[in-house]
Image (tube, rainbow, N blue to C red; front, side, top):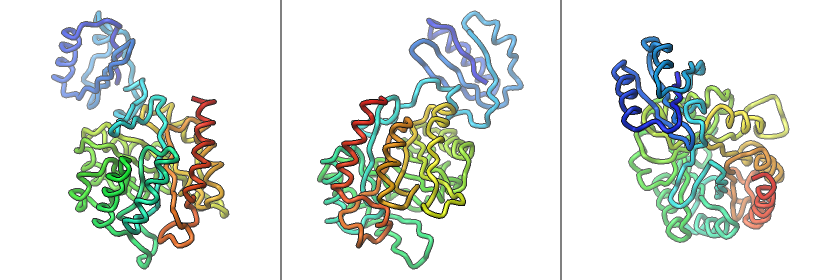
Length: 333
């Protein structure tokens, strides 16, 4: 249920109403917009007399929310969420480019790529230290050592770090990581999501390989319901019957998610296609479709990459793409 207050309501009267609603055993999510304040009522709202609340002088309207996701529902938070990562802002008209290799292979490699993507205009650096792999025989990352190399690259370039956490047990190692990524395979690891909800740190939540948008939003709800509202969603392609690309990039998810939620939506064209030549057109399409940012794999030597070289752009290719992205943004922003 949401309660929309009239414009210009005093803080005292608003506090009185909130205290009364909390006394009914409800949690209140407050969204202060430029022209109105929205109170999101979370809990058993059957105890609330809608007619009584609606009759209050300070109340403009009362509406029931039928969707199971509450905290990440745009009805609760009409204005776009802006997630701040140091000096970088994501959402609310702020576009971000995240770039870097699929996995951290060496200090030289990650520093080289980080410098290249920054020069091309990337604001955040991605790189996997812990890698979930389909085969147990594939390179699974440098783990703690990889995190240290990422920090060195951050020190060299000033780019904040985006890297994936796979296991709650490793959470202490991520204390100095700027953005924690939840990969597609962990989207419904609910214990992990709850734990991330206790942090004051941005979370990049990737859509699962075969998950619906509602399931993605419910996973975001786990994080937000536990207290952390700094969540960014990522469309990275889903499994379909297509046999020419790694996954199918669901670009319609971008405007649909913007209707359903106030959270920023990032698109990953690298994992969605699995083919480097397809990354630029899909990145441009996602930009034109209203994405709040892109996360793109870039490697200085894709042929010899230990992970996902086939979908990685070379630094010069990323630089060329970045120019085109800025041109598209100039038209649609």
